[in-house]
Length: 188
Image 1: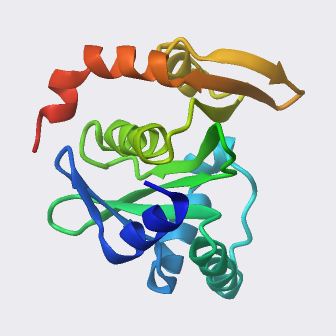
Image 2 (image 1 turned 135 degrees about the horizontal axis):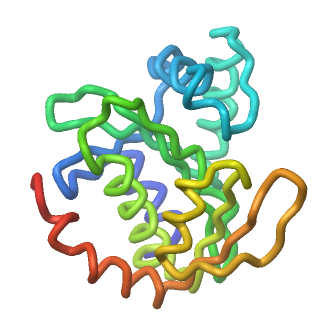
Image 3 (image 1 turned 180 degrees about the horizontal axis):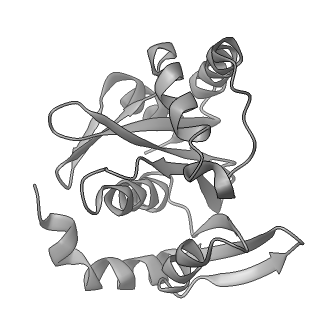
């Protein structure tokens, strides 16, 4: 599927998979996103965000232009009842890779939802964009996410004072997905 076809697909269709729903962010999600990004516990390892709702709405408006251009896709993850639980974003596409970020979920989200959402993101990049690898980053102090990413046998390609930068190959993703197939298919 080409990027333009993927763009049309996502604009028209939420993704129903693994017992969760991913749909594209809308302006009406600004308050929820702000709640996630300014949450005292959740924002410890993410980029700072203005706590002004108008700033968030304007960011979403700018994002929607990038979405229409096929430059990125920013999703709200919902449970089967339509309760918003988190976000995930795919962006920085090139001919061989994509990046996943903005992976933030409420602490009381259904068990495994954040992981299932990220797997849908990986599958999108590898299966539909035909990427060879995914780029990820995590704060050095975020030990739990660091261990999680290392479980995929992702390779650290560089680091700075704040972050580790990883590359996850499609092959290593598929190996990890096979090991977690039972988990992924629970809750369908």
